[in-house]
Structure formats: structure tokens, C-alpha cells
Amino acid sequence: MPKSFQRDRFFWITATQTAIVNFFLGGFGPAQSLLRADQGTTLTIAGLHGTAMGIASIAAGYANPHLAHKFGRKKSQWIGLSIFSVGLTMFIVSPPVYLTLPAILITGFGTSIVINSMLTTMSHHYGKAAEVAIPQANGIASVGFVTGTALIGTIATLYRDFWRLGLLLALPTVVILMLVGREKEKEEHVPDESGPETGKMSPKFWFAWVGFVACISSEFATSFWSAALLKDRVGSTAAISTVAIVALGTGMGIGRWYGGLALKNLKLDNQLLLIVGIQFIGFTSFWFSHSMVISLISLLVVGLGISMQFALSAIRLVSFSDGRPDLAIGRSSLGAGIAIAGAPFLLGFLGDNFGISRAYIMVPVLIAIAFAIIKLTPSQPVKV
Image (tube, rainbow, N blue to C red; front, side, top):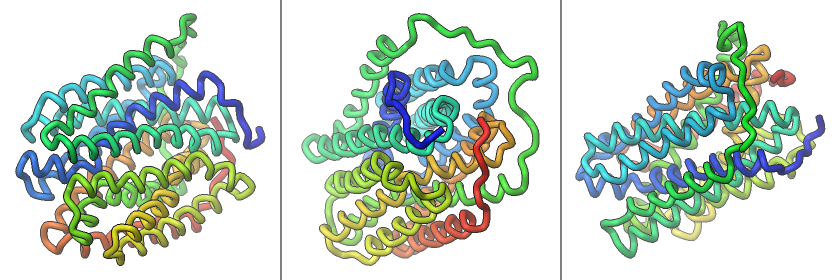
């Protein structure tokens, strides 16, 4: 199948599902400084929220092939969205850290189920064109990410104590999508008699998996603590720094929507190598900058570099799965969980002990690891 596709009803419903969970990620991730100030915790303790999301992603990874087998990929997306809604409600009404941590665990589990199912359903639905379709769906998701960041930052600036209430907007959107998006004539899912996808993955898969973890680690380390570095470098308030991370999300949105089209003549691996290089250039500029304007432009470039890494790296993992996409995406969720749990927490720990500026040196190291592994493990034709 050529790298072109029709943005049909399936595309828009699936993209909107991921946009909803990204609205939360966009509002919550960069708002770590706000949450930390509310709860009076250290960078390390605040970073445990990222750890909770990571653990949730790991759990979702193990659940993914079982949910896909029992309920089907499409229904699994709606199940994930329902779990997400329960966790988000808990987070909004539960201020103390000992309650927000389990709330984020539930929210993160639902979020990962939605994203995992999106990857497999789109890979199956679009075939080779998934290299364009998935990044574009993630481009729609970036609209949710940027909206969440901008809204929470604006509320924090104008009404400091009510920033969490902005996340409530995700809930009516979930209800509306369920009312208009669920298919009236349900396609009956018949579980495969052989059971969920199982078996060992090849050494090539696991080597590429390490590169996937490095990509996701650099993304979440940047998105979780960029506001803190910006605050440290230019002296802006936590709320203003949070709003400034809109630049990161904007770059991600532009890259996801136009990247697949602009780079469609390049092979999958070359696309990934190019955008990893762009991320490195943008991050280097951001790390050395002491100017708000240069920092914003640099974060935009970082966003462009990050934009398609998750989608393209996941497609690479599917290519090494020997025709077991649900299992491959489940293992990718395990990797994403380790990255989300470890990178923000480690960066927060290093920030407490060495300062956030020195701690950020870990990001270019992760970028270099990802680049090297992509170069050393050429992807294979995808079997879905």
C-alpha cells in the first residue's frame, strides 16, 4: 500500500481519543512545578508522579495482548478511555500527594491502553500508510497536548489555586465522543482460538527496544522538567514557564502533521535518524540559552525532533515482531513505562543534587544512544 490514506471516520475518532489523553499529558507534565508548589514536595517526590505513570504503562503493556484478544483492539480503546476518566476525576478531587499518586497510576493505565490500541488499530487499518497516518493522528493529539498546556498555564497565571480544574474539560469531551463515536452496529469480536499473542522476541527486537526506550526517555525528561530549567535560566515564574512549554507542544504538532508528508520519500529509519538529529540541535540550543526568545525557538525545534519518534520507533518494533503487533506494542508500552517512570524521576533526583542545568546533560546522552541503535538495526517490512 502506498504512503497515502483517507482520513475517514475511523481516523478522526481514533485521533480524538488520543487527543483527549494528550490534553491531560499536556496539562499535567509541564505543570510539575505547580503541583510541587501546591504539595510542598522536593523535585524527587514530585518526580514520583512520572514514576506512577511509568508503572501504569508497564502494566498496560502486559495487559495489551490480553485485552486485544478478549475484546478486540477497537473496544480496548474505549475501555482505556473509561479507565482514564475515572483516574482523572480522582486526581482533580484529591489534593494530597498520597492520593494524587494512585490517581495518576489509574489515569496513566487508561492513557497507555488508548495509545497502545491506537497504534495497533491504525497499523492494521492503514498498512504501509501507517507511517503517515499514525504521525498525523498524533498531530491531532498534539492539539490536545498544546491546549492542555496553554489552558493550565493560563489558569495558573490568572487563578493560581484552580489550575487543576482546567483538566475537567477532558471529561465532557469523553462523554460526547462516546455518544457519537461508538459504532451503532457493533462488529462482533471473536477471540482467536490460539489465545493472546505470545512467545519470545528476537535479539534484534530487544536491541531496537532499547533505542525506543532512549527516545521516550529523552522526550519525557524534556517535557516534564523543561519548565523548571526555563525558570532556572531566565527567572520566570512557574506559571509563565509552564505556558512557555506550549512551544514544545507546537513543534510536536507541526512535526506530526507535516513530517510524514514531508519525509515520505525517505525510508523509515532515515526519517527517524533525521528527526533525532533535529532534536539534538534544538536541545543543545535550549540548554545553552539564557534568553526567553531563544529558549522558545529552541523548544519549538526540540518539539519538531520529538514529534514522530514515538510513532516511527513503535512501527520499527512491530517490524521486528514476526507478525505479532499486539505483543510488540505491549512490549513497547513496557519500554515506555520504564522511560516515563525512570527518566523524569532520575532527572528530578539529579536536579535536587546537582542542579537542574547539570542534570539535563543526561538528555543528549539518551539522544546519542537512540541514534546509534537506529543506525545499527535496520527495520524490516511490517507484518500486521
